[in-house]
Image 1: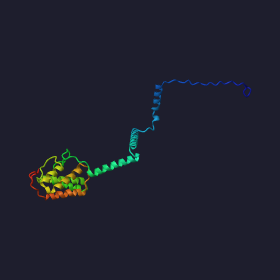
Image 2: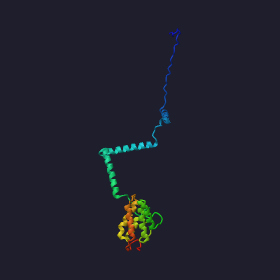
Image 3: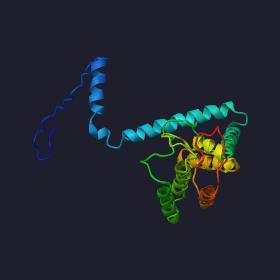
Image 4: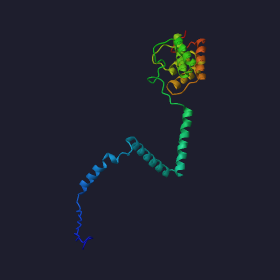
Length: 230
């Protein structure tokens, strides 16, 4: 062959390199793939630990809800109806029975938690709380004033660790005409102090009125009473 211009063309040999397959065993191949995939560049958008935990939780909840709805007549609608019924029943029982109260005499149920104070001190503290609208504290201080006043009048023997229920029961024997009011006042104290209930102004005023009435009430002589009537 003659190239343009009359010069003979030199033939060009093209050499093709042939790839020789490399035989790698399964274990080294897997380790190499794991090393490659462990590089940070492959995990920049991975969820954090909290997100992974939440994803697992929601997945578990979906599985649980799906299994429950499959076992409940009516499917999802039936399951929702059952849940609403149980919630309504629990709310009705809570409203009817109130917050569970601890048994009288339980450690920590002592009427007087702080140092000794007079009935006058407790009344002054109750008045301050009432003026500020703190009815929980006001009610508790007024009940303490009731019991302390009975102790000061020797209608009750001073006794550390006495509960409101015990004080009401003992005082009711010397003041039988007010036994019911004393018992209700003690229950209101327990509900607020230990039962998580919230007091209001009428509840406080009832104990305030009871305190005032008891101050003017003469005790009934009863040899079974714990206190010594004045």
